[in-house]
Image 1 (cartoon, chains in turn green, yellow):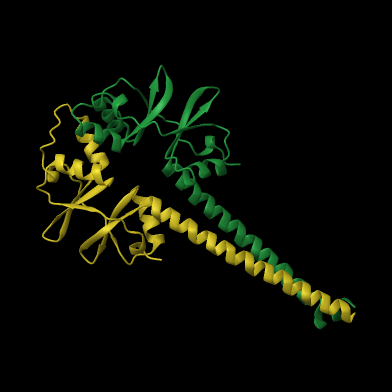
Image 2 (cartoon, one colour; image 1 turned 135 degrees about the vertical axis):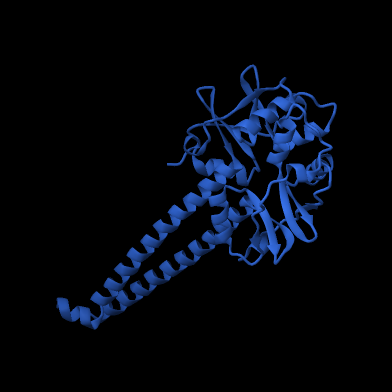
Length: 156
Length: 152
């Protein structure tokens, strides 16, 4: 079964809420990532993305991550099943999800992770459905043949 | 369905515009990338990542011109291209969004989010059709079975 653990990115980067916006931008640029988890005493409290960094850079009064961070994020357990995560992203409009295990941060799920999983899941489902349809089709054809006059002549 | 059915407005700026202006426009309009157009030709693209790179510099200068930080060449997709083609390009080039052009004119941008949603939506439609066909098969075979069984 697909769970949060299967689809999350493990190389989650964190930054303290009192760090500067430039430090956050520097980590993003070096690691080629679009989201950082903001921590307070090592506990995730918010996220910061590229849009927040740009907004912070434009605002001369905003100096620390704390002033622009986005508290709109969700925490899930690593064993949370995929349908529940998809529901969070599609129905409750979550954009980023921190994954924890035994109260420790183990990963992050972004919208792209969910979309990629949905696509792979779709491909897999499509193949499964095509095979099911083919088997049913073949069984139905056999069934019809057996009960047709030709089929009955064979087994009577 | 074609790419043109999923295009979003895109920010079109001149390569001479300042980075500050670009950031303000992108931030206020919640757009993640902008294209530089000069003489009706796409010259370059500036994404949020390019801006983050500049912000991370010690000697950052928001008065820089857009042409100094833009990325080239720009990968574009024709408005009449299929969704599958867009999906494939996004996978192979690792893009999250790119400009949509009609001949040489930029008409908008398409994002990974929209493409995957559209592909999934189409899959759900096909799944419903397949299920309906399957049920019809089953009903038909049941009818045939009952017909011959009663004759027996």
